[in-house]
Image (cartoon, rainbow, N blue to C red):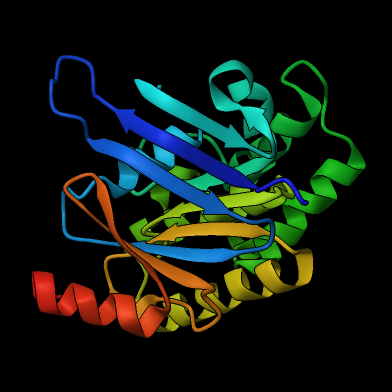
Length: 242
C-alpha cells in the first residue's frame, strides 16, 4: 500500500500563550497526487492547519507525517519537497531584492544555502517566471510590484522548487479575475502533469478547482465535513451562510 503524502492523526495545535487549540483532533489523509481544497469561515484554523503540516508551527498533540516522515523530527528536510505560498505577505516598497532572485530562492531547499545555483537551477527559475508571466519583471525589485504580482512571484518561487507537495493559502486573494483564471489553470496543469499533491485553502467558493478530488470544511479548528465538492459546499452554505 502506497505511503500517504500527508497524514495527520489526532493533531491539535495551540499557539504560544493561548489555551484553546487553533486546530483540534484533526484526522486527515491525503494520498499522493490528490488535489484537496479547504474551506471555512474566518478563524476556522485553515492557515494553522497548513503551517502545522509544513512544520512551521509545532503541533502540541498527535502525529503529523509528510511523505512518510515525522514532521516534528524532519521538518527542514521535508520542506525541501514542499512548495508553500502563505496568505499573509508584506514587502515594503524599499525591499531591494530582485524578482529573479526571489524565485531562485525556491531552489535553495534542494541545493542547500551554501551551494551556488547551477545553470539547471537558473533554468528552472526562469521557467517558473515564464509560466507566471513574470519574465519581463525579473529585474524589478520585489517591493515595487503590486500585491497581485508579488503573489505570483511567491507562487513562481514555490514551483521553481519542483516540489512533491504544494500548500497554497488563498493563492488568488490579490489577483483580478483574469489572473486568477490563469493561475488556477496553471496549478491544475502542474497537478495533472507532475502528479503533485495539492492542498489549497480558499475563501471564494467559486475558486474551488473543478479537478478537486474532495473538499474539506473546517470550522472552530475541527473538520466538519470531508467529501465531494457539491455536498461540502452546500453544507457550508447551509451552516455558515457561505
